[in-house]
Image (cartoon, rainbow, N blue to C red; front, side):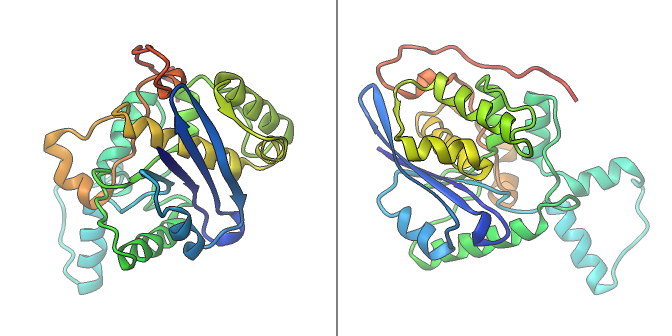
Length: 260
């Protein structure tokens, strides 16, 4: 099995991708690169079983309806207003599910710093469609939405400060590799993981892709499937890292520490 993880950024310069080849009881990091464009991502994904992308696949349905109504000049007074109403526009159903599991709100694709990257993701998904891919934003197809920072925390990786502090990033990389002794990583890849949070998130995404392939991710509730097919659905891992190899008999579930 081949899984691909993509840490998507607004531009190719900060976009990273990782590929993992899985065999019985072990795995090998076959590719790891930072600074790749959409054409390269689509090409890298050829032959992969699952492609996990770190970016929102869509916007909250109510937010889309709100913006469309505003554009048409059809806004009307609402019985629901204030913070609760705005939060409904800001967060998707999957964001609420992540909040329930992890105790933390993901960044809002509507109101936080994800807008430009989400636009890039829409372009990337269109590029996959143009190449013949069937896109199901709920994760039922080959492409799935992931949230590497949350996945790393759920797996017990030391993540504090890894996005901004070099020492913390090195500790996070060492922590992840220490929890995956069955993953073959060469010296150059190990060095890049310690230097680049984009590369580290891409690796986490590729691991998350394997979890999704094995059915070890948060399922979409039946009643939310139509919304997930429009808004996207974050495939949070629900089992430890050692469950990703067929050699392991681990079936233990994982849970997050609920904190704000």
